Length: 231
Image (cartoon, rainbow, N blue to C red; front, side):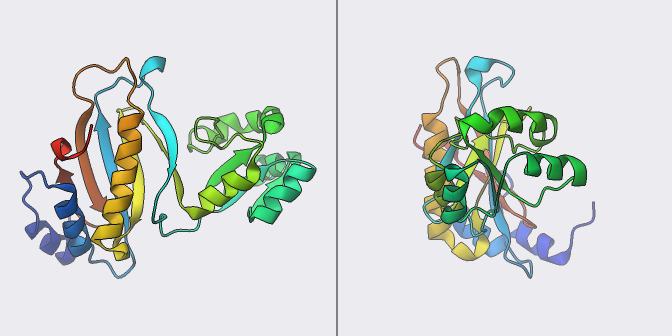
């Protein structure tokens, strides 16, 4: 696979065999993000669990202390006073069946997060086959099925992210933008890792944090020393 000169230069800054302390990893990320745009920094966390078992699922949400650097577009399924509340809180789109029809009929997905009041889940359930695979289905665990739509919208706008395992038992999460600098990225990273460690299933045996890698959109992966993360 062809890699550009900036990527090649970035690779030279990293020892492929080394595992870096979180602070050093964040410093390196800011040096290896050389694209002309503000790159997103992501953490990739491989866990020692088996996501096929219900008692080994790891899923939740956390408000990053410094946000994500991106303003998420929020779609809220609510009616009556709760719909008004969602609009007042700053939701980008609010509706009921009209939104279901828009998504089904127009293949419309101009939103990043879906929130629903519990009484609307029967309606939202019709979108399970399209929202599910995209990771957009509202969930009580993630705080996106709630009567407190104001709090849900405010938290999402403040930088709330959801973390969940993929089929290979890896969690992929944004922790900010390269322009945040090492300190703010480190604060976000520590907050995310703290939440994931706290969410460790009691059924998980052996080493929980198998590997942790951070990378910017166009930059190489940097391995983080898991023993330096409080477990």
